[in-house]
Length: 196
Image (cartoon, rainbow, N blue to C red; front, side, top):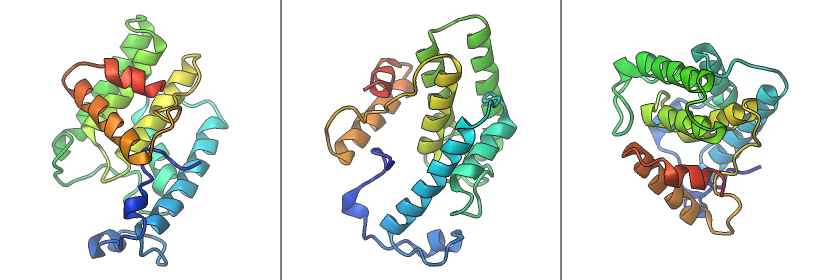
């Protein structure tokens, strides 16, 4: 199923930049819509893999393997933490520590019932996207992790804005606004968005 937060008809026929194409595995991909389709096939397979067995979601090795499963047929860097700076996310040298801290915090929240299940999963998902551990795919990765964790906690997967009949651009804008509010310690909009 296409990701409503990632599909953007305005960019569908945009050619990929040379530096993007260098890291691609399939050589036939030259346009953004071809990349989106190849990634979505890979992500759907990763979802089936993750759903087919019990996993320790709160494990850094699992998280890296999940990212690799999501993007490993498309990108050479899949499953590897980024080593370069970005305009979002933590500094690259802090990624390992920050991911482990997020895992430890989530384990504590679960063990002590610090928050309801939805909030635990959304907080963990937000922390991952805030850390921005991988070169790309962090939003889709963090949402899938949030779904896996909330299901592990006995709740249905999130809808991440797909219940509202709006275009992808509006849905993505709502998601980004909710993430920005969460960055400022207001998790309310992201919790609402996750179930909208």
